Amino acid sequence: MPNRRTKGKNLLIILAGIVLVSLMLMTINIRHGKSNLFFESVVVRAFSPVQSLFTNAVDSISDVFDHYFFLVGVSRENERLLLEIDRLSKATNELLEKNKQRERIEKLIGNVDQKERPLVTAEVIGRDATQWSKMVFINKGTNDKIEENLAVMTDAGIIGHIIHASAGTSKVLLITDSRSAVDSLFQETREPGVTVGTGKDVCEMKFVPIEANVKTGDRVLSSGLGGVFPKGLMVGRVVDVVKKKQGLFQHITVAPSADLSRLEEVLVVLPVKENDLVVEEDS
Amino acid sequence: MIPLIFIFVLILLFAVQTTFLGLFSVGDVSPDLALIFVVYCGIHFQRNGGIGVGVLVGFIQDCLSGGLFGINTLSKGLTGLFFSALKDKIIVEGFLPISFFLVATSLFDGMIYFAAITSLMGAQIKGDFLFSHILFFGIINAVAGLFLFYILDRGRQLLHRKLPNQILRPI
Figure (cartoon, rainbow over the protein chains, first blue to last red):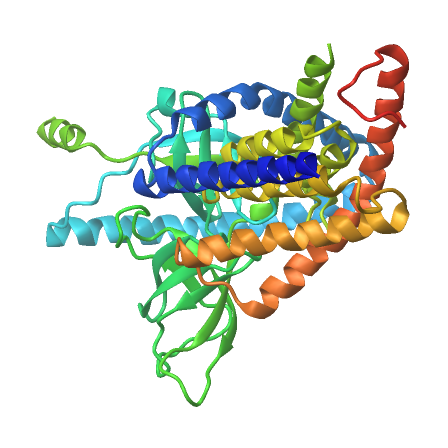
């Protein structure tokens, strides 16, 4: 009987220990905000070579499937693509004309164009180890001037921002994560709102007034407010709009423009340093 | 030798979890191999070994996740503690008990996570999504868990044959 009591007491001590250690870790995490935790960097660094190895192996296997086994319909696809190239060439010409016109107008009104931000290309080497958080690992870190709170995008648009950067690896919190928020606006109407993650594969645009004219297919861009995402980057498209009679805001669902389930290469938007701007303006 | 094998299994487990397991996800939900592993170790480690495994696995999962740090250490540690303490008192062998405990543990894991991020980090999650997502997560874990339990059982059997030890319970 005393043995059982001692065992029960030991288990209670262990239980208290687990709760205490976890609470301590959570407190450190919340108090440090998004800054690096030493042990986090160590574990991420230890696992990144294995992740790279696995990702490369999977890529090689899927490459074999893509190039040798899925060739059915390639001829038809080729014809379709040739037509698409013709169409795109015309569109490119029109855009070039418009671009030149824009440059001339900007010269006239003396508007100095914002300097293009430097980009770093990185490969996605892993995904979140839990089911609940939407995060990916990339193979670039502080060695490549990557730091926290930098925007990450693909050619299709924003995918998220850096939440943790160690020497050779970084963590990117995706815009679909329930803790993510991007200050946005609609391209056509310029109506502002905040695109927040839902934990699913779509986002929600919040705080859009009920009287705003929003329809399915509208493009959502980053507004540049908040300091993380530069202005004008594509966030997604509206896929559903619900206007409730009682309520101040619309319920808008936005599908991210980038395919977040098939990320391979991404671009990290580096900050423009004040010094760089001064040097370039001088020259 | 056994700790080395354990580390190897752990690395393999997390490498699979963070790389290509997403390819086999159903409805954007993929199994949590770490959770299944902790339940397995809680049941099959001698004495209170499952508790240590739970805390260690949870801690590594926290490091490899974008969520609130410490939340997996808590949930996996408690899972390890639960099974280490009660493995001799409840039926933990067989198809149905394993499935039941995996679903229950998944629900517990999900509830802890969402309770923490909504209360501590102010995230907003809809109730219907939360419930359906966690329930589906539990079912996926139960299915994947039976498969993983089978593989781990075979490994444990082989280990006892080659390296008789007092760390794992014999089959």
